[in-house]
Amino acid sequence: MKAREFWKLHILGPFLKDDAAKENTYLALSILTGFCAAVVAVFIKYATHALTEFFGTGQSFSLNSILWGGAAILISGFLTTRFFENSAGSGIPKTRVALAVFNGKIPFKDTLAKLVCSILSLSSGFSLGREGPTVAIASGIGSAFGEFFHLSKKKVKNLVAMGAAGGLAAAFNTPIAAVTFTLEEVIGDLNAKVLGSIIVSTIVASVTALLLQGDQPTFAELHYKLGDVRELFVYFVVGLSAAVVGPLWVRSVLKMREINQKIFRGHKLTVIMVTFGIVALVSLFNTDVLGSGHETIEKTLHAYFSDWRILLTLLVLKFALTTLCYSSGVSGGLFMPTLMTGALLGGLVGSIFQLFFPELIVSVGSYALVGMGAYFAAVIRTPITSIIMVFEMTRDYKIMLPLMIANITAYAIAKRLHKGSVYENISQQDGIYLPSHEDNEMMDTLLVEDAMVSEVVTLNSKLPVIEALRQIKKSDISGYPVLNNGLMVGMVSKSDIARACARREGYRMIESVAERSIVKIYSDQSLMVAFHRLRKFNISRLPVVSRLNNRRIIGLITAEDIVNKFGYHVKEEMEEGQELFDFDQIEEQFDFDQIEELEQNAVEGETEVSSKAPADNLDDAAIRIEKEFKKEKE
Image (cartoon, rainbow, N blue to C red):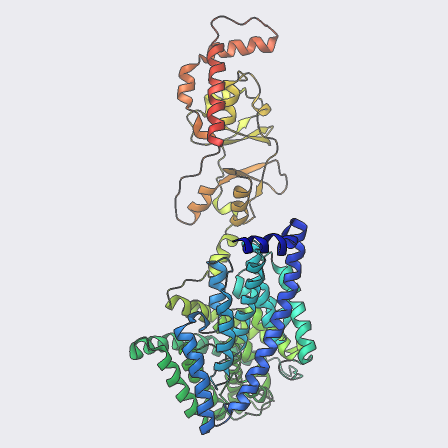
């Protein structure tokens, strides 16, 4: 215990002694997370390449390939299935679970296990990629930094997102796409406030990766040129094809996982080893579908495969092999295999059209490139990332228009054919329900005007407090706008009016007891903004005002109104102090006519108080109310 206290006070203390020190520490950790993400990405790349060469699993399997590759996948599968179940798959769904459920906390032992298991499985010839695991490992490093320095939950979650962006930026050399992917898929909000920090981490990761491995695009430039506007229709067909094949592949993975469970009855390691046997068998017939597929994508982009029969064969093999490998539960990602499948699909569509329109289709390479982005959007469901990623990987701006046409087509239709991305579907199959894009967008899509009450009960600013109390005592509403000539000058609550009356201030105008500092909202703002303001200022309702005049009230909105918009009903949380007053009891206790006479005398300057006036009662009531109010507040 003493060692822990010494560590906190003397080692971590200087980094967290005040707010300025905490912010400086957070900034330093943001930079360090980006740097470490790049180092990890480069290490995984070269380690995987070296082991693949050593095992001989990038070509037709020999006896040595089977022995070495089999040993690697056996160790990886054993660790994954027996000790570190969180290292299974790409790791991106687990990262999202950590953000949504565990406030960004990722055990560091799981991060190390993910690193080891991924390198071994990716070196065995499995049709999986390294980019997903890189994102998961880099996120784990960010989480470890946040936990080590005892940062707030919010900052730990931010560091997880920074690690994800930095890892992807270094792995693909696509910094902009890394930012958009983190916002679209990992966080699920393109308007996230952590954007600035993510950009800092991404820049550091990109610069570090550039220094370690040079500045080269992931794929060689195509120097694409749109020769005929009719080609845009072919690109549209590419998008349609991706919209059909993408959801079909997701369903295939889900079905294969069910079959594995039925046949092998929970023997997950057996599934992995059987899958390795199939990979070895396929390598004897075709080696272009082994591994992530980077070299095959290069060949497809440069029209090395121009015969539609070859492209169709490769497409079927890659489709099936990726389905088997990913559904086996071994550690490995989907990015590069997905891009390869899309490239083969786009090339296939282009080669078929080339048979009938040879003068229109000069090369199938550009269709393969567009197919990559369209298929990625149909499977991963990140349309903006897919557009930017393909552009950054080739650095060919001229391909943007066809890319956008195909991607948006694929995304829009795939959404209707099958709900959710591959990550969301697999997580749901495992009983984990990740926050969907619809969940994050719903509150921002619905506006205040959709839920507000338009018929507002208001009080005239010149109305005496005692008269206001008479008008509202039977009302269930807790707060009222105070208007002067139709314009809002303040807000007053039932409890404010009751306290003013109990203190013999019933003769005063209602505007004198109203709150002048008003928290307002506009009708075109989202319900999320309304919820945030209600919570931040601890109030029960918000006046909705006009953009043309922020003193002209057009409605009121409460937390109950917002929740009711979603089809539920909850009792609105009462404004602080409201339930402390029994207005019927107050009315019975005091003679209002007598109080009015007393107050009118006070206004006219008469100092004599009638002996019939219930002064003692009023004083006692005011004291009792104040005591109860303070007690409830405490």
